[in-house]
Structures are given as structure tokens and as C-alpha cells.
Image (cartoon, rainbow, N blue to C red; front, side, top):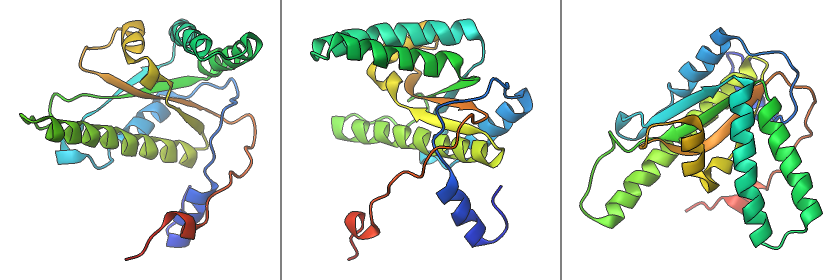
Length: 205
């Protein structure tokens, strides 16, 4: 948990890690609710709160989604000329990461309550605002998970097959899948990832 000092918060942010391997311990409904409350406390464009979330806890649903996404990914990898043995390794890892995580949270957006414009440029900007809205909500969710001792991993696989994900989970047609977040109690301690130096990513004017 971050403390009350700014230094404590900064240390907490720096210590958060992406976790891909979890213990079998389930995440309690109370904790799931707290994570979603944190997500929906994020700022949003126009305060339209365009985020939508799907909580996936049942093993059969996880497996169905993992298998269908893997089938689609297989076709994409084959078209790209990836070695068949490498494909099998990647697909096994993909299916395992989604089917065995204690909890999956699918983050989506909807344009229903976003502003409507007649021209293409502003419509595209509005859609980008919805994407940004979901992104900041996911960040809140993952920070809350870390605060409660949970690990999480942000996976963008749904971007490559949004229709498939929508059908597999029987979602409303206006829900646009953006990311799957795996959540659970960490079964490993991930290494510190390298970060680029500030001078490589910041310009001051």
C-alpha cells in the first residue's frame, strides 16, 4: 500500500510489476468490486465514463475464450510464415495464461455516450478519447490490484479479434474489447524491467 508521503507513492509506482504466473488462490468478490471501483474512479473524456468491464471467473468461460483467441492467432501466425513449432509454443503459453489465471477482466469501451460529429476527423478523435478513457481506468485497476497484494498483466490480444471476443462472451454490439487484464496472487517475483532514460523520452520547450 502506498503511504501518505509523496515519496511512498512514487516508490509504490516504481515497485509495481507485471505478473504472469499466479497462485491458485481465488480473488474474493469484495476485492473484485474494489478493483472495479478503483477503475471507475479514473478520469474520463467528457465524464462520459465510456469504459465497460467483463469479469470472467468461470473456468469454462476462460477456456472457451482462450481457445478461440488461440485459433485466430494460429491463423495469423501461419500467414506470417512463423515456424510451426514456434507457433505451438506460443499458443500453449497463450492458452495457459488466460485459462489458468484466477481472474480475467476484459476492458471495453462504448461510443454510446460520447459526442457525435458529422466529420471523420472529429469522430476519430472522439474514438481515441474513448480508448484513452479505458486505458487510464485499466491503470487504476492495476494499481489497486498491487495495493491489495495482487499481481496483474495487461494483454492487448482482444484488439486483434474484437468480434471474436464479443461473440465468445456474448457482449452487446457496441462494446469494443480493448484489453484483457489477468489478476491473481503472484507466484513469482518479476525482475525489474529496463526503463529508458528521461532524456531519451522527454523534450522541454
